[in-house]
Length: 92
Length: 316
Image 1 (tube, rainbow over the protein chains, first blue to last red):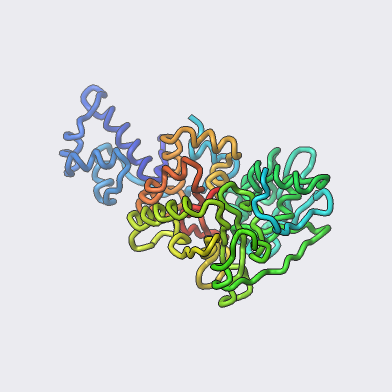
Image 2: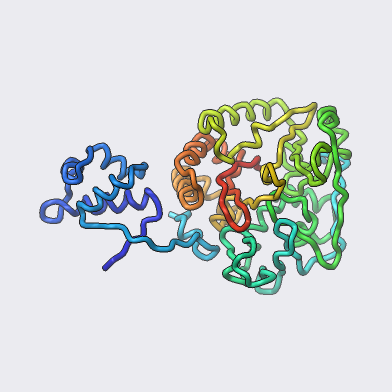
C-alpha cells in the first residue's frame, strides 16, 4: 500500500485535490459539491482545504473518509544539509 | 571605495588560519577546518543532546564535510563588498573564510562564536550609556563599541555591538551608524506599521527589535534580536540561506523568482514554526522588502533546539 506522509496543510490540499480528480464516475473528476455532500461539509470548505487553508481536524477527517483514507502518525525529520534543497523545492 | 567609518579598530589576523574552534552559547561545540577536499566540521562529542550547530546539521551526525564553506558559517562573513574593503585596508594579510571568522570572534549575531586556537584574540567589551549613544555623531564612532564584522561596511550603515550600563556585562544592544538617516527612518516606520498590522499582540519574534528602537543623532539602536530578554542567553539564528543550504548566488537566483520564493518561505514556516498562519501573514506583509534584499528572513531558536519563530534582520 502506498503511504503518503502529510507534513502540513499544503500536503493535505494536494492529496484531497488528487483524490477528487479521480474519484468521479469512470475514474474521472468528482465535483466539489458532490464531495461536500458526501462529507457533510460546505462546498467552500472543500475549496479551503484545496487552497491549503486551516480547517478543523474533524472536517479534514470527514473529507478523507469519503476517499476511504485515514491518518497514520509517523516521525517526520527536519531537513538536513543533504536534502534541504530537495525538501523545500528551491529549484524548479 | 570611501572609508565609511574612520576609527574602527578591527582585530587583524596574525597569519593563515587552518583550524577554528567553534563555540555555541559560549561553550566549546566543535572544530571547523579546511583541507584539500574542502571544509569539515566535527562536533566535540557524539552526544545527541548537545546544542545543535544549526537546524540542518544536527549532532546525530558527528562529522560534516563539503567542498564549500557550510552556509551556517557563511552567514557570519561580510558581503563581497565588505571583503574587498577589508582586503584593501589590510594588504598582505590573508583573508580567507577562516581568517574572517576568526576576526569576527564573539562579535556575531546568534549563538555561535569562533576562536583561533593558535592566536586567540580577546577584545574588551565597551559600555556606552543611552545618553552617550544619542549624542554620538558619525566622526565619533571609534568610541562606540565593537564592530559586528558582517555589517560594518554595508552601504547604508555600519553595525556595532555595545553594552548598556544598566544591564550585565554582555553586549546587549545592536547599534547602527546611519549613512542616510532620513530614508532609514521612513523605512522603519513602514516596517513597524506592517508588524503592528500583521501581529497586533506582538506574539511573534519577527521584528520585535523594531519596537525597541531608539534613534540618536546619527545612530539607531535597539535590543539584540538574538538575545533572550529574561535570561540574556544568546539564541541560535539560521538565515534562510542556511536552512535551504544555498550559497549567496543561489539565494539571489531564488529571490529573482518571487512566486517560487514565497512558496519556499511558506514551507519553511510550516516546517519549523508553531504559529504558522500568523507567521505567514507577517512574512507576506514584509515580502517586498525581503525580495528587494532589505530584510533577511531567519529562524530563531534555542540551540537544543526549540524553534521560537521567524525573525527579519536588516540585510547588509
